Length: 139
Image 1: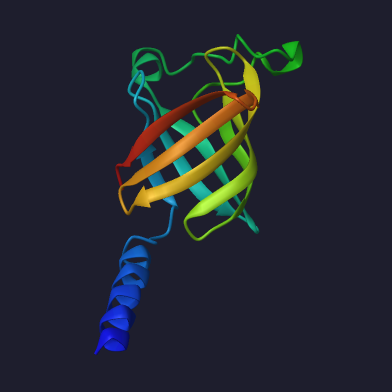
Image 2: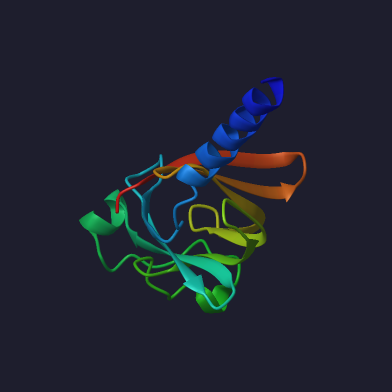
């Protein structure tokens, strides 16, 4: 009886983890400035591009003017690659890069799905100098 109860408890935990192991690909709302990022599978990695933000809605021609690489400052913000090189899955990806157009910096990152509609994005200059955001699935 105890073995059956333990097996049932372990199975329930395992199944609940699989229940939200949905594909991370999709459009995600960031918590700042109305940003929306589309995450995709790029080969065996995850990548993501900026689709829109409040500033892009006001001026679709905005450029990546804060990029630390002067040669990149002419790129449009709309469609800008923001996430690259994330490995792993199905619920956690590591070793990626996060580009922040607000300061022009690129940071080491991780992505973790907390549920089918919530993910945690963490970007670090060096650990422990990190910033974490929760993103919500749009579609």
